[in-house]
Image 1: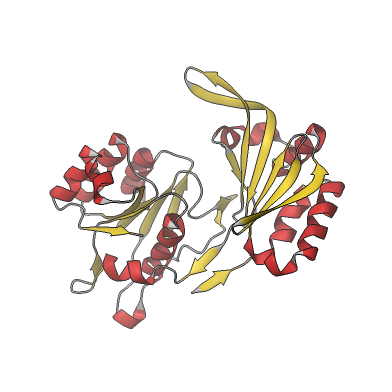
Image 2: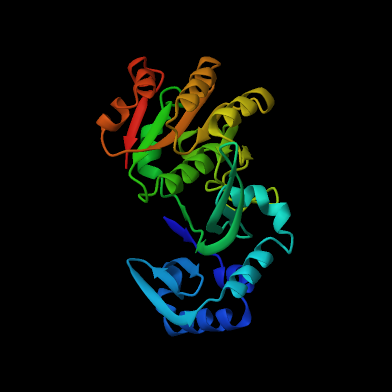
Length: 294
């Protein structure tokens, strides 16, 4: 496996005011051996900055003011918070390099929809990483060697166990093709509802998702699958964290049209799938051919 490490200091620290930049940069230098293990930088108003490094935290003495947090947000939004309002209402902004910044605060709701977040109280910079070839064991289960195709598959794991990272690598491999087994690349449509698979930044995927992959983002999985089916004629559709009845209906539609599917969902055992009655029907009807547990 190959860990793709971007220079996140150049890509992330530029968003911070001078005092915060200096404090974080000095802390990283003092803990240089852990630099590649930094997963999150958490910024909270009137609280110390916290770096999550693997299984432990590094708490900086510096406390962030509300003005400094607003300065960070304005830089993230390129001085046009209004232009990023829709993305902010989803709770995050994707920045160059594929890093995601979680945003929370006082939520404004109209007609049961989030229309704004004001009085921002916390930001969470999540460091993006790719792990090339991490999907090999899973891929061996997904590829239908006999027919040089794939099995309709659900990848199941609890939160934080690498479902999205594995799915991304599966998409890349199938999209590019696998010459060693004479598997030709397939056209894949990806519904990236929360921007975690491709990490699009101004229309450009920041992660390697293969040369035959089309991405639709910031849309529900059910709607995204239907749009891809109509507009991009994919051979395979992939999406992350399925589970709603609308998701299942859309999956039924694409599978009925002869499109293959690769999906992930939260869970630990087969019972978690059985508890989702509509989804389990797809398994019983052999429309879902493989379930892979991480």
